[in-house]
Length: 406
Image (cartoon, rainbow, N blue to C red; front, top):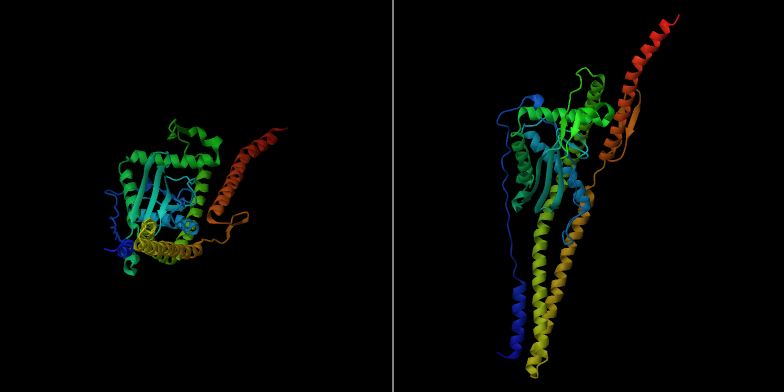
């Protein structure tokens, strides 16, 4: 074979290597949602608070395509899917999405989004009861198949429904290991911890926190304790407000579902396409570099035909390098398109007006801000009610003193 043909052969071989593309097709199955073997009495059903997830914007890889606007929306959307799965199991009391993990409830569930690109979802889920005993600390991951985004499939399940069922099943499995006395203790600790947030001096002595950070009940308040009755009233108002927030989260999820599913479908397709583009781009760059290096070596030969073959290899290798860079630019165009789409998924909430017995208040900002404002108002209501309660005996004593005066 002549040197010229060998040079052409190098270019052809490099181009052939660059053109090889592999495809991977993933599939998932949804595990059935488990239900209790024996239903619990209603008084022992634990209430669950699922905090808005951490969007995970602080620890992703540089080469990972993350869109902050989408992640923030997902952090509100995914807890709603988990709450629906847990509620559908029939194993719990009220299952609510709450603004933060500071909400005191029987069982607190937190999550962090580690990866979400339409093709793969990774969530780090932790759960603790009000005693601060850990139920769950686990990373859940799943891959969507291309069939998950078919219109018929999407009506039945979220593409990553398997993850939410798995979390709900794991939590139920832990719950069923507990004795009824433990469940009763959890609910009691919840009540006393909630009371302590509003009146630390009055309720601190009822609870003890161990060296490991666990809470346990030391003694019980009297059933007719007027301060405890006020706490019950405050807690009912708090739960009612959190219940109204569920309507917000539900509305947000409903509005987000269609565009989000389309985004995930596109993101899935682009993730697969980008993998192929990056692989093809790398192959072309490597093949081009090999061809250029071989061409340079050949161009330095003393034979005229060898030098000609080297020049052919350099030109061909340069073309492959240029083609590889163009492929990378094409991938970047897909990234920018997804960025623009993700910016349309921001959440908004209008100010909320609440009528109280003695005043009208307006809550503004996002849902987390509004809840923080509401808790401050509850604290004011509690202080006013306790102040009025303490004033009654003092007024009675003053009246008795005046009547005894000659």
